Image (cartoon, rainbow, N blue to C red; front, side):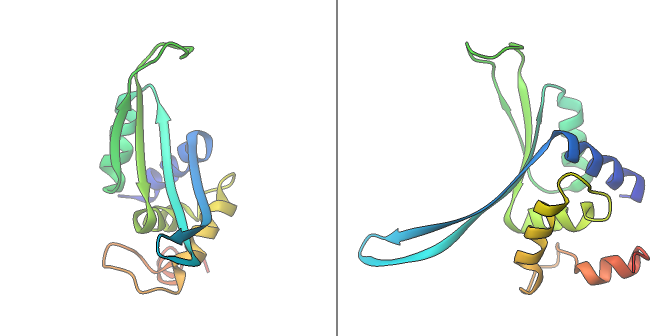
Length: 136
């Protein structure tokens, strides 16, 4: 994966992607005390399957699914969707961070959420990434 591919995917995601970062308070069945949970997800949806497969192949994380058209669909075409969530989303956000513009505030929220926590070997440290890319 080179800088050009990451920059292309970041631009594609800025235009076609969606980020969900929400916190919910949930209650346990046998306990009145609520606890916080997060919904962290990134996705790109489009009718061109080859682009969705390319995103999945280059990033190496997430899943590819399809959604058949329904009666209210305007284009009546199959929709393909790449999705990832939680720590995979953190990994992708670290890659996209130097190149994102439109989605940068949401990307930063995900990076801040996971930044201080211990990560698995698939996730990069943002400070190390910036130094390696000579961004500081």
